[in-house]
Image 1 (cartoon, one colour):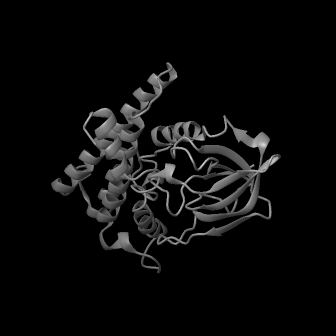
Image 2 (image 1 turned 135 degrees about the vertical axis):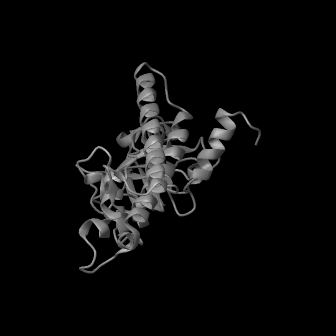
Image 3 (image 1 turned 90 degrees about the vertical axis):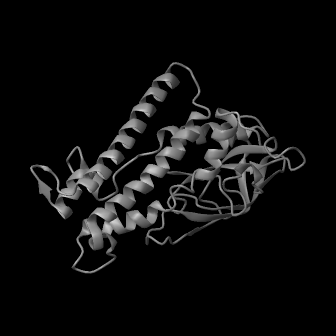
Length: 274
């Protein structure tokens, strides 16, 4: 069974609590109308878990419920979104009198924001994979970016030939390792019963920024070969690097933009005024 997540909407992405997809209580079930966007894998999913507005007359965080819906019903339409990278992992999902059964309400009515927020914390803290890019990450070396630099720029006595590039690769690897160690410490704290809370915003901010930097660095090391889209003059790894670089542009947007994460850190961690 495959699931997808119905959170973001055309007018409610980073400000997710501003969602307008409505679920009307008909007595036996909820009747859902509205639209979700960037729904990963919706075209392949059997079920969707979604945040919907069940009370429009209360503060926006208080009138949201968390429901499950069968994707194989007449009231749900899915349209894949074609991205600049050429792939379509995301979709627009439309609800036109779709049905969510009362028994498929998760948690209490109008208290779904708590459930949704906790899932986002989990995603931001453990769902990030800081890699050196799709092509390089498949290499068996423990230092994929370093091996990539040696391949395209040459090596001297086992080291990257150009000192400036060597320094750049080393600093990037240190950032990655620092994040990995910090995430490991946070996981241990979480296992002891501590909820990650605002720490997840720090992970999202740093992790997504590093992912973009990885893609940038990979294509830079490849030079012209790192920007190939098609043709025999580019290898599969090089074409994959181009698509990874294009796809990485969205990493600092989806799941909460970098700007939103910095606002959360400023207010809730540093205690700065609004």
